[in-house]
Image (tube, rainbow, N blue to C red; front, side):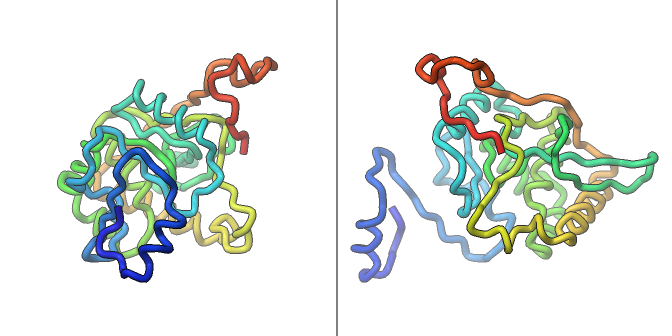
Length: 232
């Protein structure tokens, strides 16, 4: 449960909080740092961690369950939904961040992705400190940093699950980062800064996507284990 909430908020919280069979702990960090989302908190007792942004409302329970089951098959990978790819045109030393509209994937967004808790330890204590400082200073690119770190440690690409290409929020289209051209410029800058920090490009590009069995088949829902899988 949330700790030390104001008394006047307790009744309101109790009224809105869903009935759960598992304990919920709310950790309040001392500093507002983006790298905090991957800190190895003692409260995390499971091997699997689901990193999810607070505005992700469009994923279905079936998608989350399938993502978790996929992670169980690949616990040494990042397993997530929207994929992204880095490009290197004309053998240039500069890399570019691209949204994934083809079959190529070299990153998955940690706006909703599963990873092993050991990677939180590596991110906090073993990754070049320059990268964590960059993330905290610019309040951006913690997901790219995590993809770099996992790929550098394992030599493997992430696992993209389901056909979902992006998170669509109809209520916040006007505020979407997709509408801001500088978003991709800043993300590309992160890529190149991290490459300099590592001394090489660790990301691996693959053509792979994990979908549920029978997902694309025209069969009755009753024979499918995961019926509610989005296509955006």
